Length: 115
Image (cartoon, rainbow, N blue to C red):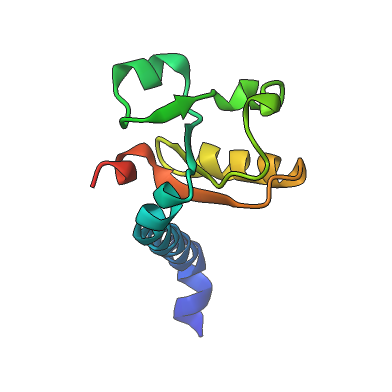
């Protein structure tokens, strides 16, 4: 019990990153089906980050602009959100869900679209 008390922050981080990794792998496995359904692949990194490197066929709407550009997205189309690590895309997913988008997936890092 003492070990758990002393190392809970490290264990918490390990669990958090494991969850993020597992979640992104689940979404990655769904990509063929989501593509078939006409999903929009949304990259919420900054314009500069997106211009430096991006996955083919992704739409760039930076996170700070997303709330004012929701009208560019369809609520009836699946949306797969990415960023550099999964943090901003997680925030984007929450924002989209809050605004009535029902089929939203956070794939994490944009590089998950490449394989």
